[in-house]
Length: 447
View 1 (cartoon, rainbow, N blue to C red):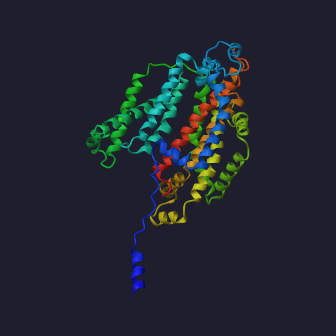
View 2: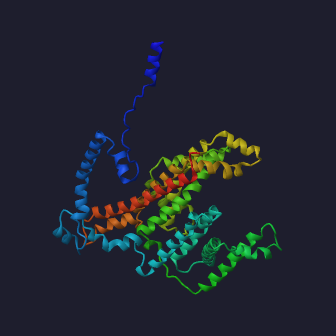
View 3: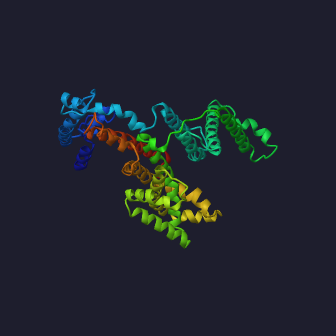
């Protein structure tokens, strides 16, 4: 009995726990540093070593680019006399206008700025939460904006059809923004004011008829207002710099996805002719470098058109780049299509959907959402590859940068222009990458 009491007493004896470690701050800048860089002794030593090596590597670069650089000089010889070990950024400033616009006349560069501003305004509504039918607005922008931009870029005596389409693009954009303003003011959209009247003609399509009527009315008004405004002609030969690079990359990026989708669907088709045509197109284009496709387009494409028709070099380059990008995009899209389970196809058949409705509304949205990282990677590669057009004589930003080194005042200035262009390309590519990551989070591709 005594032994049992001793055991119970031992069990009931209070034994204090060891003291808890102090709370580690894991939030804020200090917490992030402690967690990721200075978590323990080895991490601290590794962090210090890495930063020391980075300092040794970056110190000469920073001295060359910033501390010993020359920002004001009239010639390269003067730069070398001021600081022979620093960058001569003074040679970049006189060429900034050429790097941006090429040989486009200075007095007419407002047309380029206006076109890019309108293009930016067209896609701003895609980021607004209250705006509906964003896909429709994007498609209308892809179809209409090129006519408006081309009218502003080229100028001169354009056809009446081209002028009307350009005016309709501007009218559509104006209608879009008026409806956005009315939506945020909790007012009725423009077509809703005509909906009651349009119901007399068609009750189901009253809103569409009202929107089309307003669009047509604004097109007529804009066409009448600007009918006497003549734009001076600027040939494609004068286009260059970042302006030309954005045109080539923008058109090729926009066209790469639909071409890739068509080729990918054709490769998976059960029709032998369509299937083997798609396979041969993809494999032939992907088996040669891009510069080969560019040279073939410049030399062979005119042979397929009448002698009376002259194709400028920019059109030939756009055809080659779009075809090249579409062939690579086709394999990316095909990978996304193969990732969709067979049950999705069976579910679509059970609902009575045909092939095209199944692809458009069920399969392709899921496949493209899965392939967002690969698609954006292809776009980034394509944006960088457009610099190859300088080899065939187009004055894009790369060729304009090379021309700095042959200027009599800046003879031999090679490194500084390339570094400046590299920074510019990094900004564009990094922005595209960040946007793709935000788009992935928004669409929640892991669900």
